[in-house]
Amino acid sequence: MTQHSHFMRWTSRMVILSMLAMGLPLQPAFASIVETDQAVSHEMAGQDRAKINAFIDRKDVLAQLQKEGVTAGEAKARVNALTDEETHKIAGKLDQLPAGGDGVLEVLLTIFIILLITDILGFTKVFPFTRSVR
Image (cartoon, rainbow, N blue to C red; front, side, top):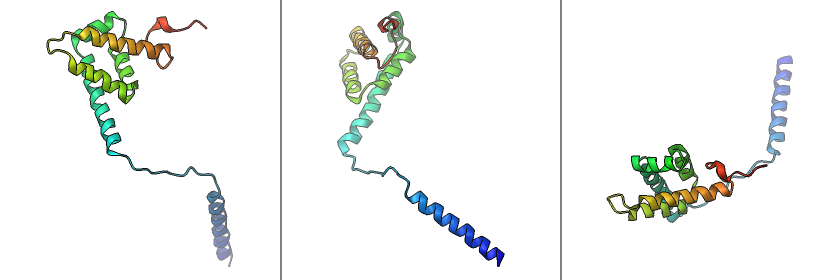
């Protein structure tokens, strides 16, 4: 009879713990429908980021970035931090460039300005000259 009483004691403890655990505050899970536009937009942003990163990997672009004091890794990290809209805008400018590479300076200037603005706002720390002395 002691084994039966031991089993009942163990079972009652587990039931008590289960009941107590049910009262714990849990975060409810919410599901919503993802619209096709949102899914396509997110996928396009990934393709745009890949296009910008491929542009950054070009030798002439890398040379210009290094001339401005930005490494390829820092530039790619900044591209990954851009919103989908900003990514689409920059990739659109890349598509408008002539095939010969004219206009590379304008795209680099655009990327530099975006990096500079996000650095000033404190989202990133790429340029040392934007840091405040505290």
